[in-house]
Image (cartoon, rainbow, N blue to C red; front, top):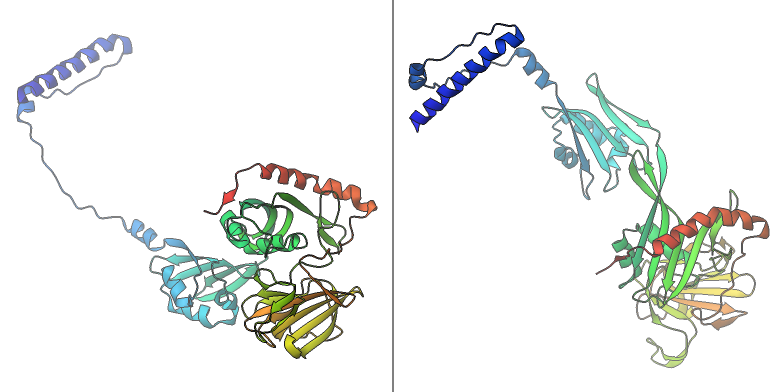
Length: 432
């Protein structure tokens, strides 16, 4: 094998010589080649030389001034020291400033999940810290002449529109979570259709929803969930659609595509989510008195402290204790309607007789005061002083779009209607 390699090398050398000689007349240049004799090829040996090379002083200086940026998310239970440690900050002065200086209070109040960026030197000294405060402004903490200074830049807000679809497999919240719909938007969805759909008893597996909603971003990070712009809910095969329309600077609401108000004068339920433990009945066995008697209301089982909402605009006619109701709030509406909220653990702060409340306002919290065997809300709906089943009674509608605003409404909501139609035919996010 060694001989074959030697001959091959020799042929290569001769070939190079021939090419060089034949090209001289054409190129008009003289080229000199050094040819290793065959004897030297056969005896040539390879040596490995190891030599230590010292880096120039300038390169070392540049390395010592290098800085590093690191990004971390605030975790539940974080302390200042723990967050700095995860960002490789080893700086006692920075730690003291962030823990105690009033100018760094926004850092100590950062919400869980908020991002923080830190610039450090190679040895862990903090040079700068950046984050979005809970108010949305960008906060910058920088080291200057050995001390730290904090400054806040106005929030650069922008609105982004998102679209989500989902299908009910178990509960509304489970489906909205599976579809990636933020919780505030899920609550809005329930409120929008609460006049037509009772989410305690009407929800069925296979029901579908489509939502177009806004998110507010500050410096590229989401800071809050905005308003639902359009939504569709298909409940038991029936489609309900709603589009938001701002009639003027002070008034806006949700309407069907033909301009009817989605909002009812009364909500179907005073609680967002719970289960009905006892319905309206002319005869039932009382769980405490153990006697058969009429139950002219609806009981909603829910944990103590669950918020109770007024189902309509009205004026508070009674706040206090009353017999088997325990702690109770009574509200008058439009002269002929009354609602009752019993067994409350406590009342909303400041609520008093004669106070005007709006639909959805918190008036109290679920409890088990009075004749109650467990935590629940007893809710009654009266028309002209007579109890009626709030789950079955026909509720009055709110005012529709006026004739003067009909053209503006149709122009504004046309694109929203098209988006709902488009999304209706897309693949749904399903809960396994």
